[in-house]
Length: 319
Image 1 (cartoon, rainbow, N blue to C red):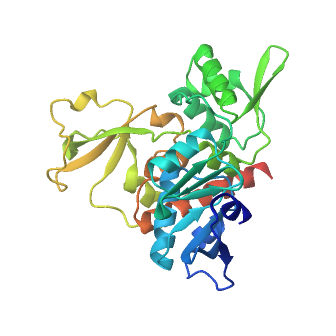
Image 2: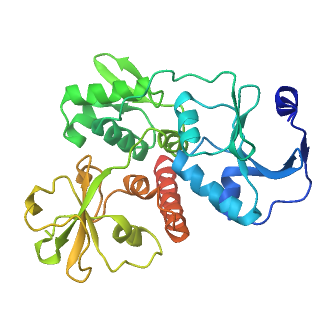
Image 3: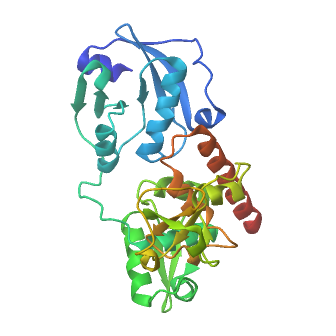
């Protein structure tokens, strides 16, 4: 990379030898190149798709580094202000050609300029998150906001604010057809979800533990319990459920698990999990967001399996 040499005098040598085997999931997301930086062995990871969340990137790099026993450097085409700040916070090395260099294992940080997003992005509204996930399930086809008012049980004002936030974030576009407001996008559902993950928070606000005898039948399965329904993962001993309110268990719940034989986990969600659910479990995109920080390889593989089913089903409906 000429940029490193011209700015810092670091000589980059690209090796023809292949990178030690890592999972197919990693190879699907990055092109890996072994290099030497002034004699120090490292791996450049060139993203093949839109960047995942920083927590996901951190897990990917930990897996790569475990396999190759060398620092891994993210080499994207560009970084937003928010992405740069998160990468710095998590000490993830990166180089953006002609713009930024952060190599903490060499004690180097140089910033010349960064792209866009100079202002802090506000927290995603629960209504905006629901609207976006519903739109992705809808196949990213044109969607009347008036229809979502009925489907998601929000007021017209709430849907208007939600669509405006999504548009301001560059996730969707809107247009008018008569008096109707229409949401649309040029992106495929999977691509939109990958991009949106940088903005979508974990739907789970907190988790409590409740006696099994007080679990209501109408609660949706969540967590590993739901993931086991959507994949080949074995069901966990501790069952997990999702709720829009946990006030009913104020007196009987605990914040720590005391007895998995007698208790269940109940998650408090940012939005009503029933609004996107089909069947007895929370919806799969929300579940993927809730589990994206899990470092267990079995969980990550199960989530990938689940999402593959989602994209296949959406494609089938569109064809």
